[in-house]
Image (cartoon, rainbow, N blue to C red):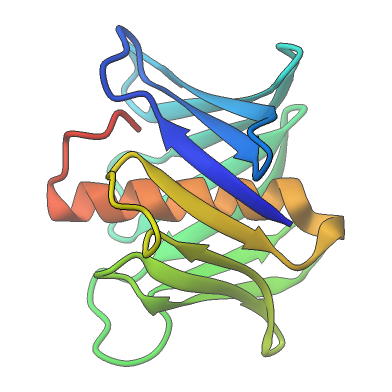
Length: 167
């Protein structure tokens, strides 16, 4: 199923919506201000808190923690320097390890497990900068794959110094 992540460019506070391809709002991503670490809340369309995304401060590798109901669900680490191989690795609480591979410069990448693509993230088809598509192939992990896509896109924007998008 295809999802669209749309950032609100001119919002007073920072938020993005995750919508289905039929423009039904599924999740909202809110940024919490006035914290040492960057923290985002993943909220469903009814306003219920689903997960927290916490970017750890003062780490050598970029590390992002994903928490659900106070429990650590996953963590993403990004190598600072990588000429070859994966730049992002994900460790899930259930023991699975995911790889995020692709053309990060153009923001065209896949989330994979054991060589199988679980999701494809692309900005290719969007001329505006505030939206990108997430094609989810694994229905079982839909929410986690959407959270991972938001995390990686945000990290890439930080690396480029891109401040026009709110997340």
